[in-house]
Structure formats: C-alpha cells, structure tokens
Length: 120
Image (cartoon, rainbow, N blue to C red; front, side, top):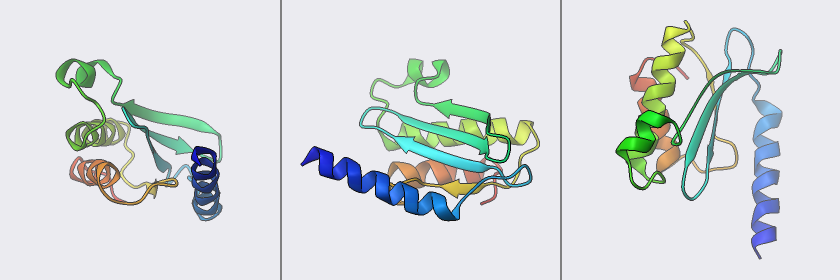
C-alpha cells in the first residue's frame, strides 16, 4: 500500500514538472515536505543550479522549534527563503508545490515567502 502511494506521488510530481521550469529571470521555488521536516529551494533549471535553500534543519529554526513538522516552522522557512531571495535580487519565482496539495504547511510556506517579498 505504501508503495502505491509513493508511485502516485511521483506521477503527480512528473505531471507538475512537465509544465513548470525555472529560468534565470524566473527561477523555480520548489517545496518538499516530509513528516518531520520541510525543505525549500530556489533553482535555475537552465543551468541546473540551486541558488538558495532553506529547511527546518537550519540552525536558527532547529534551536527554536522542538517539532519541525508543523505550520509555524513552515512559515519560518518561507520567511527565511524569501528574505534570502530578496538579498540576492530575486523577486519573482515560479512556485513548484511538487506532488503535494496546496494547503497546510505548503500554503503557509508560500504565504510567508510572499510576505517576505517574493512574487509568484
């Protein structure tokens, strides 16, 4: 049963990635969530480079949160990645939610990144 869910998640992700890719003008903000953590990266797909990354495992979040798989942590990761992007003069991105639904932690991260100055 778990294997079927993994296969379905990978199919959804492939379907999303057919339509979404990052360029140097509009890099791709991709989000991955596990049960315990959340990860975000800004990627330029033309060159294959990760420009900026943030996750719930970085020192400033890890010290303040006991459980890192919640909405509060997702907001903090979104705020941090938004601030880092604005420092590097990246203002517009393409949002890649992967195979995850746009609600809960994914939505919280996206809203916090928008508040920090990113435009999707």
